[in-house]
Length: 255
Image 1 (cartoon, one colour):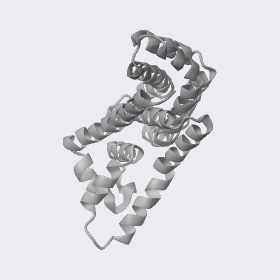
Image 2: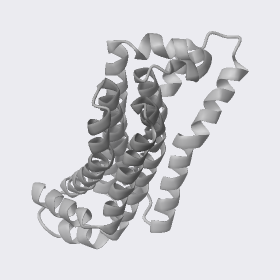
Image 3: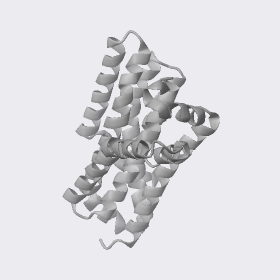
Image 4: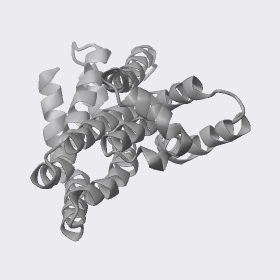
């Protein structure tokens, strides 16, 4: 399993897309820190990159890599290796390469210009979102045999999590604004890893006022140690559940 993961990792690290992704993140991160005298403002701008671009690239790249590696995966399955090990090896290799690109592109500038609890929180959420959306991408790829359908489905999920979900939540909040919605709001935020990451980071940056009247509710819960553990725990569930479902489906799939 480790040998397969190493092969996948080395193969991806030589990929031009991975190199371009790393350079893009590195250029944007350094530019933001150079343009802003206050590193907190640069971190706030970098927040949008981490919440929007990182999930998108993780989803699309992982999906395309899965379909492009299909012949290699079939070759591995002719060997005495279980299907689950092949899938987990692919997941480990792709995840490690994307995490490496993220750490070089965002981690190095953040550690140089803003090495504090906020910077570390940004890196933590960026890494968790990379793993979450790589896991979801593997699930969609296993479920959809056709490449075009798989990529389309991955993009639809990204649109839903990054753009549509916020609108739906706001619609619920305004429609039932006369009722106590504190607990429902907390629950709804757990159903979207991007929302959860956004709330966690905005509280770390102490800009909860930008979240409107729900900011006080978020700050009371997510600002505590229990809230931090809850955020990390939910993110881990978002990583483990999709990849386990993908492994189960891949084990039964007729290749």
